[in-house]
Image 1 (cartoon, rainbow, N blue to C red):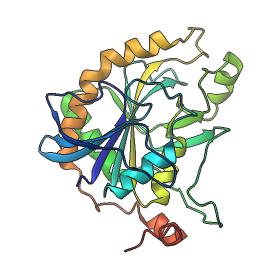
Image 2 (image 1 turned 90 degrees about the vertical axis):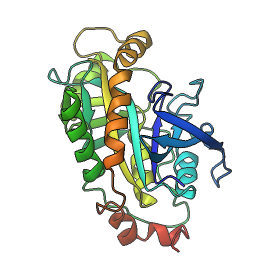
Image 3 (image 1 turned 60 degrees about the vertical axis):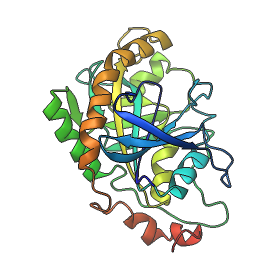
Length: 265
């Protein structure tokens, strides 16, 4: 079974490079995942792929069953999760079309299930939320492919589904570099399960602070123009990912979340 999973949207991978061999949609204690989990090979590596918002994109960011998604991947044996997502920019230097390999986040969500632990206090430490090994792998791949990218950036996660107001956007500029709607709670749920998590974020717009109105068409159009390089980035980087190379699972072990969730062998 695959040790690497991609969570993203339609077009993130090329059907020429990701050969689907099977699909599963397991039951979890938190319901079904967003959609069938596709299992196949990318550049010779076993990979699972999950549509975050469902293949037809009918789930808004609040409705995504984050706990079911991450639990289902864990049950498949996944150890490394790659998130591909679209974001707005809060800083001039993070331009539309750029790739951001995220290294930190801030949580401004309001209505989400943020933990698997419903019957006790387990405190996960997140000094380094995103996997340094996978981040370095994709930075090297981006250099090789000539992709304009930023090695690091703080992702501010809002509830959505609406975009920010101008006042909010200007305030958020004091806190972060990019803004999106999905890293929370995906990242921290992965950490509770002892999984590595990496975010490859494509900048699609300048949010609202730049006096350039943002709408869904702008986001979709920019993302569509960038899909080819995202697909090539995944194809190039994934064979160089080595499960167990980092210490991402240490926080789950020290906090006791795996033991609490009865996930230890």
